[in-house]
Image 1 (spheres, rainbow, N blue to C red):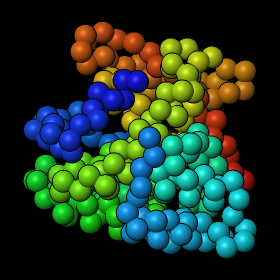
Image 2 (image 1 turned 60 degrees about the vertical axis):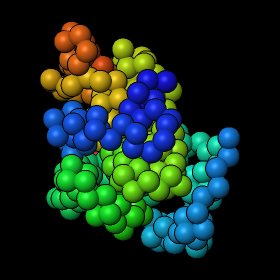
Image 3 (image 1 turned 180 degrees about the horizontal axis):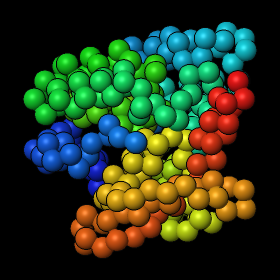
Image 4 (image 1 turned 90 degrees about the vertical axis):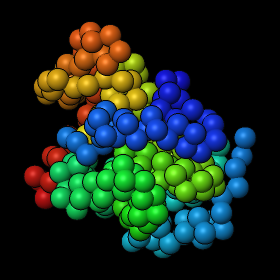
Length: 249
């Protein structure tokens, strides 16, 4: 699993200098198109966050979403992150273009700058305050785990590492991205760039193509290590379905 190269399972923030250097050089910028026991605060927060994430959770929310969400919040090793992501696309707050939301961009930049400044308390405060809105977002969880790592809060670091790793592995398990047939299936543009970050690739050109009625983002990329160019495909059916619904509405 190549995602492990982003944050090896080691003592929190043992690799802090490398992470901060990466943030400063923008290589890890996200502002773009065994069972564990959680803290009691997270255990209680799961119900509160569920109510905020899905206001109809008391009776109208999808039971499947409720179940997998609670599994995630309790760090259940059996959490199906693919189901979590796909069920999230049916929720009222789902927005595949969240990266264009000025509020999201501002909050991400606040956390990014706080991390670069070593102000981990500020970064962690921003993370927790808005987690109910961005818990499925790769970039948000990435900054959260490094915020708590900087505070040597191993419990919360472990939680966000668990979520980030689960989300990323879910994307990587959907294909290898080397062809349309084996495209990564994503639910947002931030997932596309998150996958490229994990693969140590930089996007150069993006084009929308359709094959047999299925929409894909075709990304021309450069591998950071070798400088070689390549092409990565993303299946963006959930994104385009959401977009069609907006026009229908």
